[in-house]
Image 1 (tube, rainbow, N blue to C red):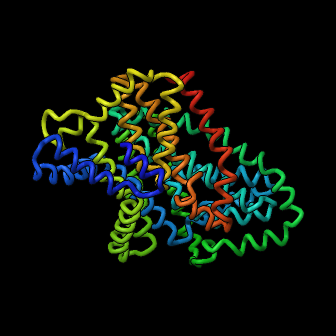
Image 2: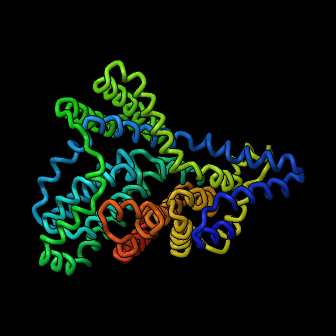
Image 3: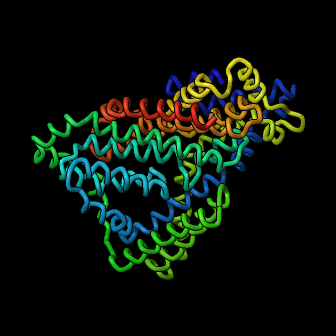
Length: 451
């Protein structure tokens, strides 16, 4: 674990160390070279089985959005919001709200180009500096919404699986804590840049023209908008998603059942979209969309499989599927040793998991550290699911707020900066104080009220 964390600090991918140490642990534990080699494969296989549901739901949501975008439906989805851009403050709020709503259902990765290309230019015209548009996208989407991930539940599902607790427990705790962090960070991001807004308004015409010229995504691809089909699909999508949310609360659908409902709806909407747009050609197009979605999901999440496989060696419930019956949960043993020194319900443990999560986020992924913090949280909690979920949620916030795209310049924050046309290192500097303040407040709240 120390080598893995050090590798993250040095801004290198941790796949190689995880594979090497999976092999070494297998070799030392079994004393058999062949079994150790098999353990490398089995660890990844077990991780893939545990996590495939997350991969699948992400791929289906991305594929569904892509199927609708063929008619320009994605543009119609956000067009009404652009009419609300009447001032810098209102524009900032609209960009944040739109980013949160679309990111909740489609993940920030496809949502950010959509909002950045279609809403940020309107916000710039209303007097919002391009940099603040990028801050809104990063804090609301790449940080707050992704760290909670309460609809798709990819992040809490991964953390919960590693900690050995129910996904819904991590989902609501992580959702509440990231909402608190966002409630601090997002307003602070605006307040600290009021001077920039005043300066921008003095040179509004020239800067706005330059900013719009620097938004390549909005101009890179001309879509032929079919208003009739596009509106039908947008209304269908909105109605379906409202139905999903109402069903989740009305019928108490949680965890894997909620993901199954969302994934099934995504497939059905994709089917309707492909048949509506392509007719008989939809038979082939549907397969292309599903394949594109899976390619996207594995490209983004694929490296997590061997990483999760290594850390699953520390989970006593999973390690038996890798090293055989009787294998101990090594990391849980270490966690119990640490727990004897550090109380799992105090500020030291809470900030320790937050900082560890932030360190794991330095690789620019945000997700690769979730098996680390989840497993350690479960180990330190010594069987207390509430404490494990709280500590895991704090580690999840640290990993994703830092590495998911708010403070790491080599993460998906590059996409945010590129879409809006601002320097990524300047964006990191603008995000630093709001992010740290939000995470500190959320951690204090967790210690006082959730442990």
